[in-house]
Length: 189
Image 1 (spheres, rainbow, N blue to C red):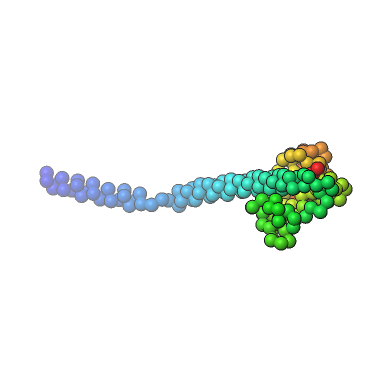
Image 2 (cartoon, rainbow, N blue to C red):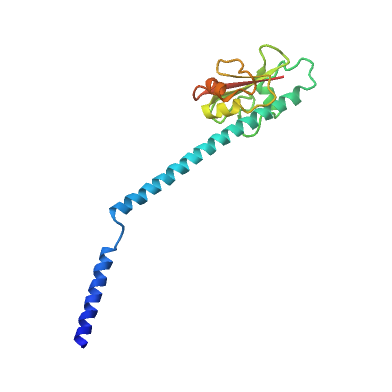
């Protein structure tokens, strides 16, 4: 009887060892499934981050342009000659440019987040208007910035002087912002 118990015990241990050996690690199919799920998660995270960065860029442009517009209007409010003589150098010395724009001291040369020039000048059509131009703006940010609205006399891109009506429709904005590297020009009274 005791030998039968020993034999049964040995068979049980051996069976347990065999079943544990068969259970070690994941199979190739399971490993592929895990990697596939991980890839989907990573792709989703990258897509969300890309959207967040584009949105942040659009918000930054809107805030920067509105800050410049407000600063120029305050600075030239009491001037009888409108905006004649407005320049980046004067605006830089007066502290009109927002802190998140890179501005070269002395010349007032300002650069946007994408390495393009930011230029403020009197309008070519009327001294009672001034323009703010941002160069090298990516397409997605351009579309958002152009359709954001605001108190502008005109908004133009690249070679288009003004997109009407203001704010333009998404279709008009997509046409006006054909690719990356756009220049947006806002005209203010």
